[in-house]
Amino acid sequence: MSLSAIPSDRLRAAVDRELAAIPFIDLHTHLFMPSLGAVGLWGIDELITYHYLEAELFRSSDVTPAQYFALSKTEKADLIWRTLFVENAPVSEATRGVIAVLSAFGLPTSGDLKEARAFFAGRRLESHIKDVFRLAGISEVAMTNDPLDPDEAPMWEAGAERDAQFHAVLRLDRILNKWDQHWRVLQAKGYDVAADGTGNTVSEVRRFIARWCEIMRPVYMACSLPDTFAYPENSLRAKFLSEAVLPACREAGIPMSLMIGVRYLVNPALRLAGDAVGKADLRSVERLCVDFPDNRFLISVLSRENQHELVVYARKFANLMPFGCWWFLNNPSIVEEMTRERLEMLGTSFVPQHSDARVLEQVIYKWRNTRRTLGPILANTYQLLSEDGRGVTAEDIRRDITRLFRGNFETFTGIAKGAAKGAAERQTSCLRAV
Ligand code: FIX
Ligand code: ZN
Image 1 (tube, protein in one colour):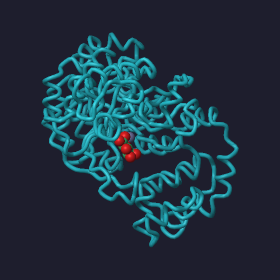
Image 2 (cartoon, rainbow, N blue to C red):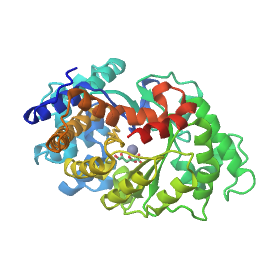
Image 3 (tube, protein in one colour):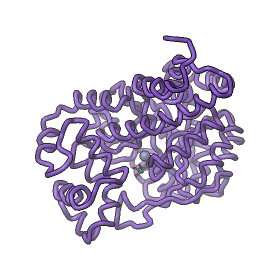
C-alpha cells in the first residue's frame, strides 16, 4: 500500500476505490438468517410492497388503505408498480432503489414484472444471500430479533441454526413500550410478572432477558422509542430500563441501542407505513450516559432537529456511539448534511449509516447510495486536510473507512474479539486513542 501523499485531484478516485474495496458491517436491519425461514422477506413483490412505497402509493392513487390491504401480495405489487413506476417516474429514493436492484441483476426496469418474478422464483436463498451481500459490499448484518414475536421466537427456542453473516440483536420494544399488551406472554412462559410491575416483575424481566441472551447471544440489545421518551421518569419503562435491561447489558458486556423519535401510527390505516417523526428531548440521553457510565449506548435519533444535539452529546460521553441516518433521514440530501457535521465534530468516531433493510435485496441500493453520497464528502474532507498541510495516503483512507464502517461497531460491541466480556475496557481505550 503506497504511503505517499495522494495528489488532490486523485483523492476522490482513491476514496471511491477504498469504499468499493472494504466490505461494510450493516449494524441495523430487519433481515433474518435462513434458518428463521418465512419471517425473512426477499424477492420482487416484497421489494415493491415495502412500507416506504405503500406510503407513496396513497399519494398517487385513489385506492384507500382498506382496499389496498384487502389485495393479495401480487395484486398489491402490481398496483404499486403501475402507479409509481409506470404512470409516474420512479424518482423518489425508495422507488429508485427498486430500479437499482432490478438493474443490478440485469432485469428489465420498465414494462411488467413477469421476468423479475421468474428470476427471483428461481433463486436459492443461501446462494442468493451471498450474491446480494457481494453486490451490496457488506460482509454481515445485524438482525432485529424479537423474543416475543409469535412467529420468530419458537424457531429460536427450537435451536435455529446460526449463520456468521447474521448477528443477533435482542429487541425489547414489546417489554419497554407495550408491557400492558405482552406481560401475559411472559407469565404464560412461567415468569412471575404482574401488569403493574410489582412483586418480582423486574427481577423476572431481567431473568427473561438473561435467558434470551443465552439463546441468541446478541451483539447488542435494542429498542425504538417515541419522541416523548423521557428518562428519568416515573414509569415501568424507566424502571425496566434502569433495573433490568441496562444491568443485563453490563452483565453480557454488550451495548444498548436506543432509536428515539417515533410518533407511532399517526395514521393507523397505513399500518407499518403509518409512523411519523417527532423531535425528542435528548436530555434523557444525557442522563442515561451520566447515570450509567459502565453501559454503552448505540444511539440513533429520527428527527433532523435532534442531530446536532446528539453529536454534541457524543463529544461529552465516550459511552455514546451515534449511528446511522435512520428511516426518514435516509435520503442523500440529509445523509450528506448529517455526515459532514459528524465528521467535523467527531472525526471518524461514529458509524455513518445502517440500511434498516426489511427486504434482503434492499441492501444493494441502500449501500450503493451510501457509497455514492460518502465519496465526495470524504474526498472533500481529505482535500481540506491536504490544503491545511497534511498529505493523505491510501493507507489513511483505508484505515478511516474501515473504522467508520467496521471498526467502531466491532469495538463498541466487542465482536472483533468475540469476547463481549472484554469490550468495556477495550472500548474506552480505543475511543480515547482518537
Ligand atoms: O424501529 C425500527 O427499527 C424502524 O426502523 C422500523 O420500525 C421502521 O418501520 C423502518 O422500517 C424504518 O426504516
Ligand atoms: Zn429498523
